[in-house]
Image (cartoon, rainbow, N blue to C red):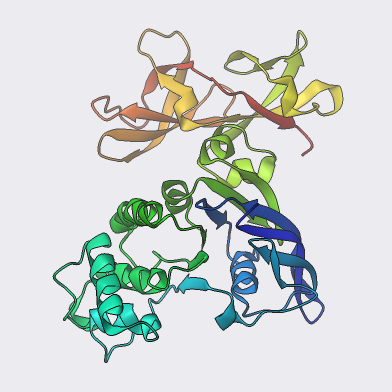
Length: 348
């Protein structure tokens, strides 16, 4: 039985439908993420699961029990924990008191044991007597997570939990939080607009647009096998080159002939397609007779991200080890190394 199931969930503010016939389910212990741009409805979905919003239609079930739909279980009775974007710690309480806030019904000894366990789990064993203002942003986020986990919720919701942190810290903390959730065996749903956070945290990711899930899949498949043009554009970097179907399931583009997966769908009129090329599909090769001009480059430490212009004027991206430091305007050899050919009808 799924720990969480959303069945054709819709939610509207007056006449404006924000969530539209949305469905997904999560197994116990799974970590999922709703990923999408601002305004796509992902935070509204989280608020509906938490019980802060009533559904327009559909149902939400927790361990097979309906908590939203024909009946609405109040938020405080759902055993659903929440980690907010701004941490929402009590400034007048110590770290230990914050974590133990939801455990006031337990005997003192049990409450203290659970607080100590969680302080160790989130890597703050010596911080129990500190106050929130004495901690860094990353440490405050760990305290907020520990507080949400303390009552052992059936489900944990995380609302843009890393958005107030430095960019370099976000992905590292996402991996730490994932490990903490795994250690507790907690089922969790996070919402974010940052794909790096989503990929670091989640087993499954739902890409949202216009109140609907465009694709629910593993991070790997979202990147290499996007279901439509929106997912392909939103996840990762890449460009589209025009192509023409040739010899059945092969497609010809300016850079050569590629084997196309027939499961990727029909081509457009006249066999015309748009082929997605990721930066890792274009390999720098000095021995190649195929040349492209360096239009711009971005230094990323171990790599450069080159923008390259082809003979037709079309541009592609290429990740190149940073010891290959080519000047803007220079022509360099390239070759294709495409394991997953993603092509959509040219009219899509």
